[in-house]
Amino acid sequence: MIKSEKEYNAIAERIEELLSDPKNIDNPEAKGFVELNLLSDLVAEYEEKFHPVSPPTLAEAIKLRMNERGLSQKALSDFLGVSSSRISEYLNGKSEPTLKIAREISRKLDIEASIVLGV
Image (cartoon, rainbow, N blue to C red; front, side):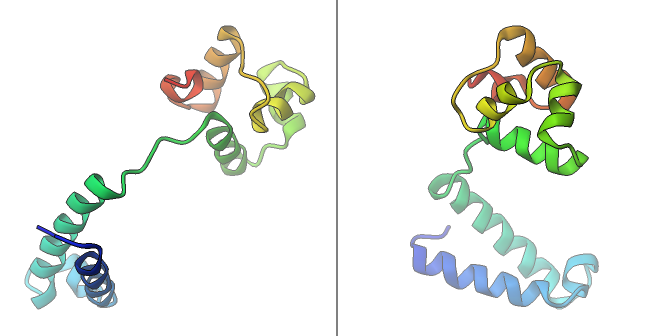
């Protein structure tokens, strides 16, 4: 169990060292393989408790999907059947989509409904 941020940082540095040798990642017979896995589990446990990752906002999720799919705001507005200005409002957090559009965003962009609905 990691007890402090100082320990966490030291272990994270050691993990980086171990990751620099590909054998430690792929070969269970490698000297660093077991150490890497044990330390990674400790860090994951610590991060879950002290550095939890919050879900993305709707705007972040839409921007990610736009980037992944090479969509402009105009292309996204055509794809979803809403105006470009409405897309801009979603991306800037100035408005929330209607339930109908939220369903389209979730379905067409493959974004979890909980993110789209903000729950």
